[in-house]
Amino acid sequence: MFIADFYCAEKRLLIEIDGKIHDEQKDYDKIRTEIIKTQVIKVVRFRNEEIINNIENVIEALKRYF
Image 1 (cartoon, rainbow, N blue to C red):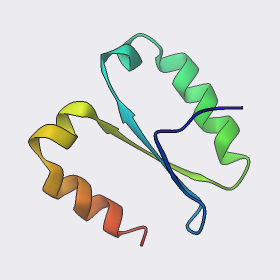
Image 2 (spheres, rainbow, N blue to C red; image 1 turned 135 degrees about the vertical axis):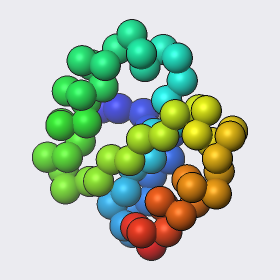
Image 3 (spheres, rainbow, N blue to C red; image 1 turned 180 degrees about the vertical axis):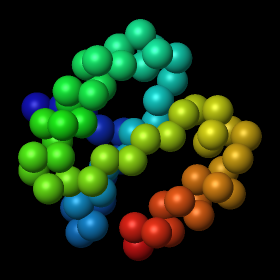
């Protein structure tokens, strides 16, 4: 139904990396996240800027799920 950036089936964790397009589709993203959560999947979002400028914080945030 949806294409995810990254998904870990073992942890039921979906990771989204959001670029500028997501500024224009916040309502769609919110609905999509709610639909995915009905499948007992945790959705974690990061902005492109977070990945580029502060990867250490992103890694630390992800460690909480593993």
